[in-house]
Length: 204
Image (tube, rainbow, N blue to C red; front, top):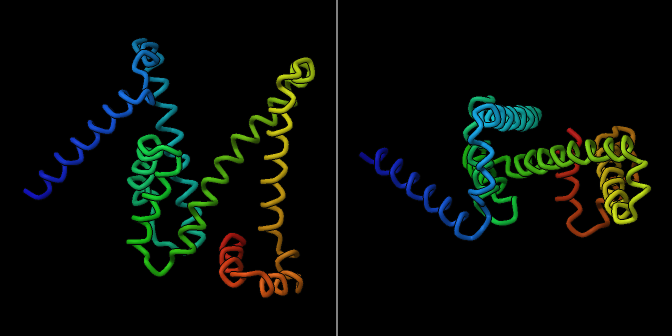
């Protein structure tokens, strides 16, 4: 009886959130008219599902590297919950908060490591999008140079790409991690021990 009540409550909440998104303008039903074409509909569903599966495998891999005993089958429901709340909660990061909540319930002693996997998962996804954008800038550089309105956008993409690349190099380099200066730096900055713990988990 409790399970049925919970399912009904979830359904009501889901319908309410969808209605709120339509009412607030976050979801325009008119833009979905193209999906009346069966080919577009099937292709869209396949691509969306494929993206979710790939994202789940990426996160499950990161969790495995931090010794979380969770399979891709176990993390998939959390990934679906995260996707839903990314759209339902303004800001686009609500899904990570919800995923983190369920992850911490499963492994309460690994909160820092769990937070690291969520951060890296989001950063890797962003890096993939920025990488594709950077490649398109190179492919279409004549068009970019010919339109001054695109110059600022191009510089922003290049800047973000370089920043994330530098972050990965500094975080993953064993040579940099083993420098005595790194330990000295963490000992001097406020909250250095906590930052060092995050840095170590990212490096692993």
